[in-house]
Image 1 (cartoon, rainbow, N blue to C red):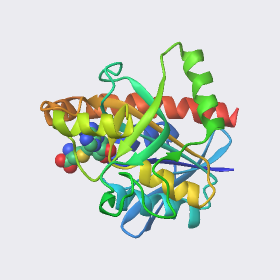
Image 2: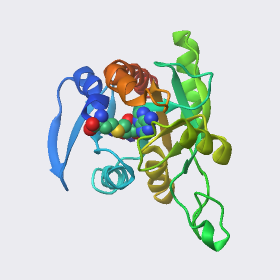
Image 3: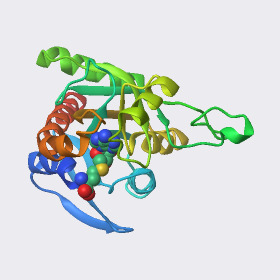
Image 4: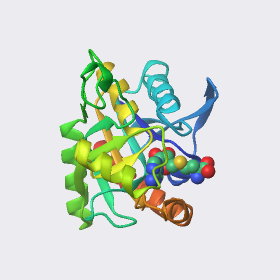
Length: 230
Ligand code: SAH
């Protein structure tokens, strides 16, 4: 087994690189990939840069070039569900692309022919996450995550995403990573810690909480790696 651990921004993988300590670095298509063995598990770590295109490229590279056989994504997100406060964790059961729109042809939002409106994550990895959360004594919400090439800082857009997809959180990479992993038959797990509420204060909150929330998510992912290895 080789685990891919991916984020979108440097802040999302910094706590992970710090934890693994030593690694080999290589560059592919404008991104750096960090390989090492951690707790008996081979891992490849990278951040993709923001958005669906860069994250799809990185996920595919980790699988095709680096031989990753499972994908763990760690990062931050905007909350939709009122149950989610800044710093809370959410695991995606399924994800959608909220900005994908060929409704002019009678299709639902988020759907293209031969694709699906929602893409699911791996149940076995979600069970491991639940076990880890129980052991740590922390709440772990499961829900729908909506992805789009858009930083949402607007109550109306957020409400539209909630009513259209019943989404609990939103971000800019999860669905594209999950689509790539499903297409390449690699189990995928998407974890996010809340950095903001996708409303008019979102950019202010994001800047204030990016680092602390990214660390909450990264620390949880490393507990999962410990469990997978042990
Ligand atoms: N501050 C950055 C831009 C951040 S974009 C800069 O200036 O360069 C937001 C990132 O955090 C994306 O990777 C996305 O996945 C996640 N995210 C957090 N809150 C979000 C929100 N409200 N809307 C969309 N993405 C959000």
